Image (cartoon, rainbow, N blue to C red; front, side):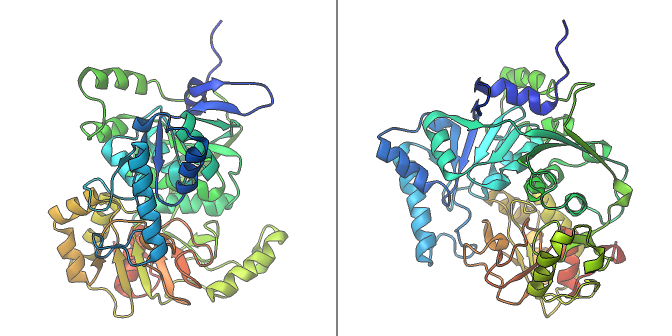
Length: 469
């Protein structure tokens, strides 16, 4: 009797279930556990109180990223709380025998950027981190998701986690993207279509020829923001693009082990006839440069469109939060964002701080200068990205354009370090969240692609990149 066709998600999940019992969550083995300074301290304290070690230190990788400064990074951290959190991570890693890529280490960077670039993130794995954007790693054809502090302790102590199996959603995108449209626009378009809660309870697989034609960096951007539509995570089946990206990286398999793993990775695709709980399809030709106007990532529009009016909202229940959002953002229903002056441009975060993002921005701004009214921060996602950017001369292009290239870290993605957007100021950001106060108390965020951010930096206002390319 032939086996029932399986989705990619089923194949990986089921192969990692250690114990299954009706009416209870599955016990799932975790291949790689990433930790940082924010969500790990309580977990380590729990181990100390129970008098137990980390079950498998070799499967855990640690890096400071959220609290770290992006200027004078090797000097003592000025902010007392941030310094304490980073020092605590150092002590915990030393006490429990965990590899730490500390400030100044060539592999230091944002946790979701260093995993892929070091070859620690591989197809077929289960990967967790006490950080919602762990979904980034799913671009390699694995199951990656964020977990809470108590679950961090669970994985440290047992290398397993208890989870109910999510429902499965397929999002298929076919067709050719228009000029100036990047993967960030794809995911902002999808979230705007289905809402910030439209994939709640699901694990999403992205497919279609539009996805197949994307680079690994672009795929990571899409999987990164799966969480912003409520999904547990996102994934893309591995292919030659994936294998070529991984090959030769620091911790990637080599020699015979590479051939063995490659043979397995090539089996990681959804079987013909496998069923999903929900299937959504979109045409690439319908996607244009996108920008958000509100205080959740689902409040997005094409950059040339206008903000909706109350009467145009599909759900009456949204009206109160819609009005509150516009009040916070200082915007009016029915108005256009095009031409809106901005104060800051932030190019960075685990969504868009890879070398490909920096190259796109540098290519556009070469020979141009930033507008006088805008402050521009370029934050590479890791020391490896920063080193490569300098080797390619991107730092000189940024300097000539008046952009400030800083050290790696989460930076102005969130107000947990020194890189905060001041109250009332508008920032075009390549990060993933535009919640109230996300980039600093009372800051106002427009989420957009690196190209839309770059053109805003040059013009000083929200601009359609297609006017320039």
